Length: 110
Length: 118
Image (cartoon, rainbow over the protein chains, first blue to last red):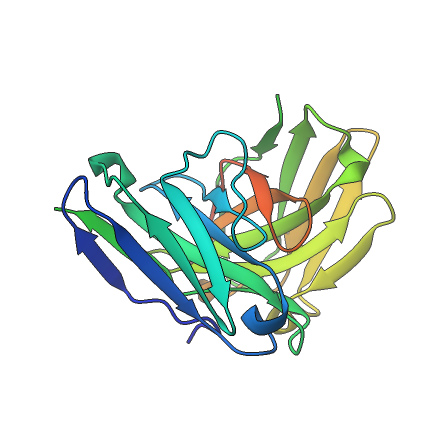
């Protein structure tokens, strides 16, 4: 079982908006930065969001991140079929002294 | 441009060891950490550990302590990750990634499939 909890799957129609939640505790999300990754089938993960809400160069502003207490959320607007992928949240866990990931959320763009 | 290029796929028997390399280029190797992450077939991401190439400080995941060793060679800007006493549940794609802090990895290797089978 993952330390961070994500919904196994979410879906939405092209052009719509979707949010993916990531729930943790005070030892991880509550006191550390959260990152989000996109993993297309058969490829390495790609950093979408770091330090809760910042986007690396080249990541469109359709992707957004937020954090409140011990939960974080990834938002994707203007959904495209190319957004179909697995999405992972990650952070540091101070109790485990380890980086931890959520179990991943599979996004389907119907 | 920043690139991390990993060594090729490996097939190992249970009890053997495997060493995966990760050749970095396009940036100052000692200015960023290297994290190793693995992904078992059909499963999620698992953090294995981190190494600072500037001073070789390492931090390993508890469940791999004693079986994993991460090293770097600054002369060739290459990071290495070795797993010993391989078991079938070590079968996974192993990734190296450039870690710029706060567990954020902005560049990833292409992955190395390690298959453990008798």
